Length: 169
Image 1 (cartoon, helix red, strand yellow):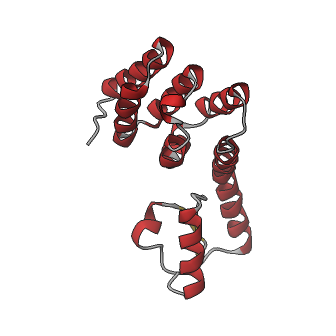
Image 2 (cartoon, helix red, strand yellow):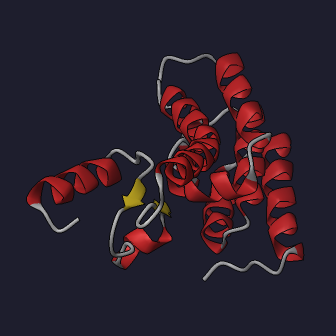
């Protein structure tokens, strides 16, 4: 991971908000890569490696799906109905996966121009992450929201985070 090629690949993945996975065949990952999804195959036989890669694939699938939906939702030409479907899909995703994509999800909010139904769903998705950063976004969005449905959705997501003991830092 110290090679120039590795650094370039990692920088590109971070810039594009692409999930990063690490397969360690020696020393375990260091730095912020320790927080990433990774497997260590060092010292494993062929069958054990196969099992490890299958487990990794099962862990990656929901992340790849979430990444695809988030990428699709960035399209500015999507209708409200299409965006609603995308955010409803995210509402059904695993909270841990949503937490990993919290920043790219929050960037999908269109400010004061956001549709009230989409805003409510987006607030629900952020609330599901359980992260303090999500609460900070929600509080900013509450100031922008004028429609009662959007405001209700945001307030509900903030209450859910409050009940979990999550507070913006």
